[in-house]
Length: 193
Image (cartoon, rainbow, N blue to C red; front, top):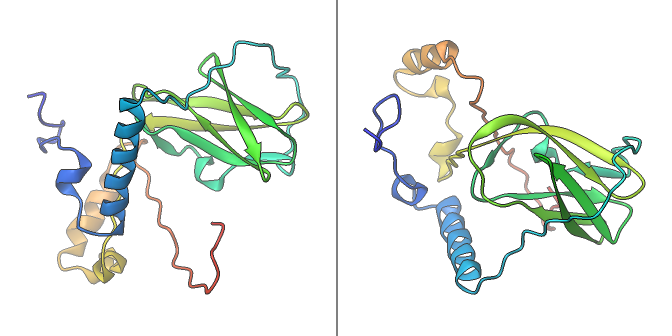
């Protein structure tokens, strides 16, 4: 059935399977803002049809993707903002799947928006600031965020039946599964990352 994945699990939007947590609330805020932008016909995707020099030296100290976009990350199919840092401005350009998109550099940071796209990858992606470039590889797909209370800090070894879970993880046969664990960082001041 088209309402189930290959394992027979019913497909459902994140809102139907999220815990009432900061992540869940953030997801709804993001969806509401996106819906409002779409209703007002505000599109942040800016395709660029001019020429850019792609034969630039690579220098990640001058321009770089945020750490999130490194190492073959799987990026959401429908929420496609790419961000990073650039010492040059006022514009940066992203080459992705034979198209070029532009974004603004503000306070040495950039954001570039891409249209929703189909799942696939790994795709090469490069960003240029007129002097230097940075490159990475990403996949496009579905992303599930798990967040919640203290029980989200439990490790597999602390759970009853952990040997079954450990075996499932070790025998999983998919190159497209990623696990990103954000470390806890306490601070009295706002953190950049």
